[in-house]
Amino acid sequence: MNARDNCIFCKIVRGTIPAHKVCEDEHTLAFMDVSPASPGHTLVISKAHAANLLEIAEADLLAVARTTQRVARAIHKALAPDGLRIGQFNGAAAGQTVLHYHVHIVPMQEGQRTGAHGRTPGDPEELKALASRIREVLQD
Ligand code: AMP
Ligand code: ZN
Image 1 (cartoon, rainbow, N blue to C red):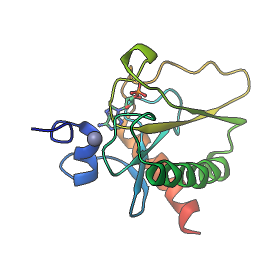
Image 2 (image 1 turned 90 degrees about the horizontal axis):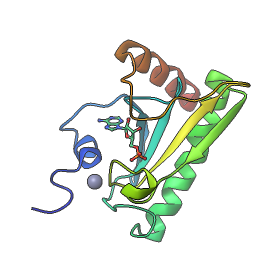
Image 3 (image 1 turned 180 degrees about the vertical axis):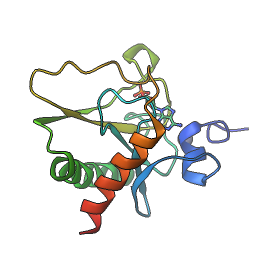
Image 4 (image 1 turned 60 degrees about the vertical axis):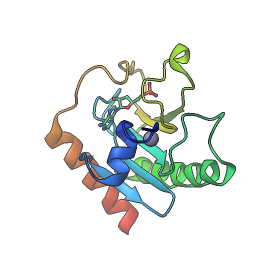
């Protein structure tokens, strides 16, 4: 058994567990964080399994960066946040809980304190609606 077999994000890539997908290309996938720090919190992952920044292949890293910018622009247009926080954690000691490389895109409002990510499950209907609003912009 290798790291991919039990990896929750690899399962999303394989389609064996569901996600509110925002966009997908050959190398990357973006979907709503199931326990968002703020409404619209989206994750961008490489389809190829790599635990973190130290392990990911350069081509996959660049592909994730491209998708992150594309999705960040779409969130900016769809949800009009005052700002966008982009974050990425490497290793459990740094707060990484899913050991598959991913970038957080967290919309921020002026004066808003974000909640901790990964703590409180979002409302599935709201996650679905937010994914759909972001997808609409991407399809324009
Ligand atoms: P971290 O590893 O700390 O950078 O964060 C992992 C993030 O993945 C957390 O914000 C979780 O809410 C999120 N997460 C965990 N499982 C899923 C899932 N099945 N679908 C969407 N997001 C998830
Ligand atoms: Zn994985």
